[in-house]
Length: 275
Ligand SMILES: [Cu+2]
Image (cartoon, rainbow, N blue to C red; front, side, top):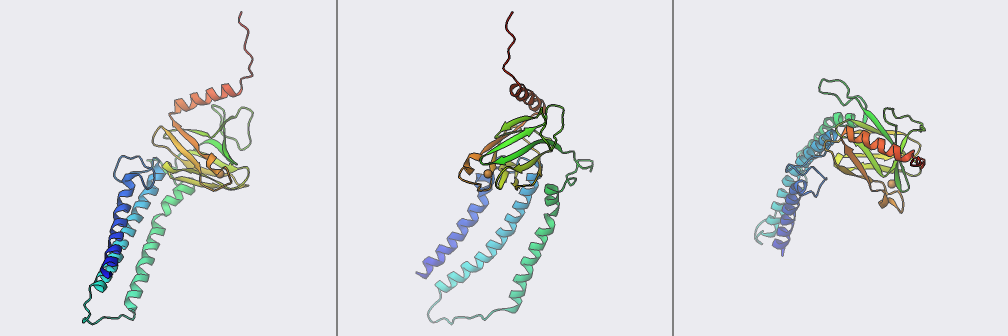
């Protein structure tokens, strides 16, 4: 019976390892572009975040294999030991304790320092640079207001910039955020009631909407398509209804779409009678 349990735990570890390593390419992990074996996010910053995730996957894989080989060896040795064999007891090892305290500390400290640049680019304006080293221009496209249970979006009229206070010619949509592909765009995130969270999984963008706060969130999109836009905070009974759409389109299509919505919104229904 001892051999059965030894094998059981060894096989479990092998399956866990294999599943973890094929997950990214099978789409069981994060949604990706599906191109490479290790698929990537569809935004520049998202790709940097993915690099961090893959680095951590490497580190935990090496640790997992090392500890599980030792565990498997101990289990198998214990299961196959002959009755006449002398058992060996350990009462702890000071050097081992020191090693497995220092090594994880160094690894954690390394990750903490290594991710600082990505964190800064994600959170601090001016940390995203152009190819010539200048801070990249961020285009404020819209104000996104979460409420139970929908997203209300306010855009400035064509040729105008987004103002903190609603303007007479602003354009409004519900559950559909349009952005121009390729541009580094920002939204101002707010909430009308409880705490919500703006989440676009394919872009690796996630930000809580906190009552009383205006929070800028910036991201770019590498592909022209519709992305899933979700609420990632259990905000009430209708939380599931906050599944919306982020439409990334070419700048011309974006402007044309704005014109169309503006025309519909300000149409007073009056039609000149035919002569
Ligand atoms: Cu919500």
